[in-house]
Image 1 (cartoon, rainbow, N blue to C red):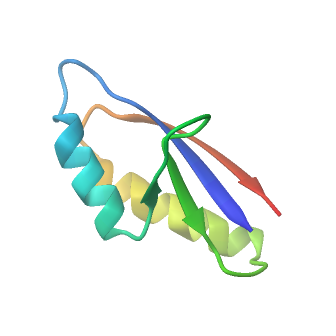
Image 2 (tube, rainbow, N blue to C red; image 1 turned 120 degrees about the vertical axis):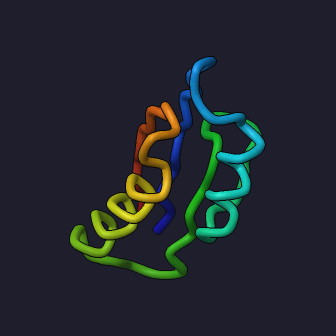
Length: 74
């Protein structure tokens, strides 16, 4: 499974280079194309595990002005 993350950055928020650093440190891979980042689960995971990842990303980016969109495919 893979989770795709689209990042919408506010001009009043944290610089995009800082957002990139945070997300890469969390194990997300930058991507060029339809989505900004990809998280490869290396297998099938439960909805609960997916939500835990999303919660962690939200916590790390709290206060940055970033808006996130998530999509997971098998």
